[in-house]
Image (cartoon, rainbow, N blue to C red):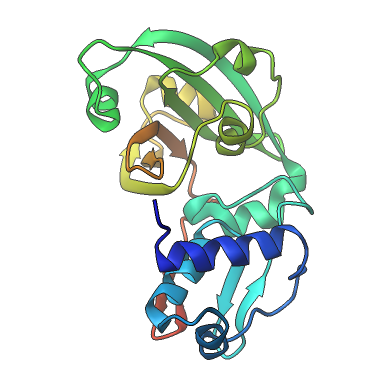
Length: 242
């Protein structure tokens, strides 16, 4: 299958960043320069840059351009959606504990998100991420057809998506997230060590492979009092934080 133009640009830039052709702190060519380099219009270039940014490899800074901020070689934390800026600052004080990894019958929201038949058996992984001795994230991952023994034998898994990709062979290409404000119930208050009714962020994430097939469903809860959710949007080449 022939690659789309934006994927061709993305793959080339991705490989150059990973091989240190563009090192940490380097500024990538401007969009105009990339149009000449790749012989494409500005649209696929912006799409490729947007994906590099979502992968946590670059930041698109107003008045400066696209700067390499991560190449996967200098630290264990790839992009983590709306929490990526905090991860890049705090990765050396974070730890993660796997509470449970087991095969279960999928619940309705899982089967719907993963496009499975009702009562399909899946692998469910429950983890707590701890920031400076404070439990901050409760993460519940769901997979189909992965080796659960590799998860059980892995010990501390700092970044589950990276582990799933590199060890379990899960193909990640696209991600969607749905965010809601919730109050801690009895289980959440226990795991996150907060009072019942404490305000939390609930994020539902569905990851898809390159064929648009859902391969992972994650529901996680965050103490956002110290971990605000922040996303970068691109408009006319500039960046907006909300």
